[in-house]
Amino acid sequence: MKFSLAVAALALSIGTAASAQMVTAAKPQSIIDALQAGGYKAILGKDNSGDPRIESAASGAKFVITFYGCTKNVDCKTVTFYAGWSGGKSTLEQINEWNKNRRFSRAYKDKDGDPVIELDVDLDDGGMSQALFIDNVQFWESAIGGFKKHLGL
Picture 1: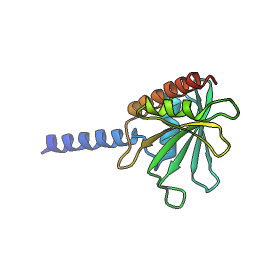
Picture 2: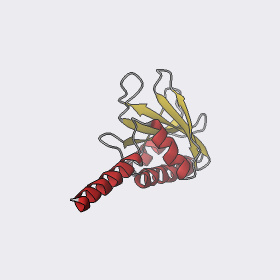
Picture 3: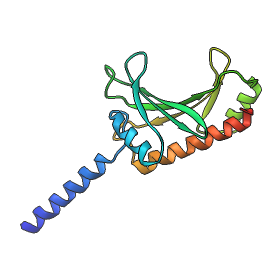
Picture 4: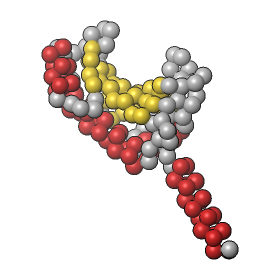
């Protein structure tokens, strides 16, 4: 009987520790913690509608993480990594070529005609491990660098 209780307690503590390390959009601090653990800066703020917003940087470019699927500015479901550059001479053909040859990121010209790149990360239904989240951030960092090179930014 004591053995069974000890095993149950251990299983519960492992499950609690694992879920505590999960990165979820519902807990913006978990994203901050993951970014900082991965060596990235992370500043938590709010967007114009009051939803969480994180500022960071990678590959010599600032980027933001915006939150979506929020209920009254909390309990968010997903995030989007976003980076944009003003000015430059990028063409729509260059943007389309980027999108044609990339599977996960997407690029477009914003309302001012400036180049933008985004990457969606689904953190709903329990989120993901810090390691997998950092893997996504490293992919994002590579995408930013590649996009800048592709457009000559």
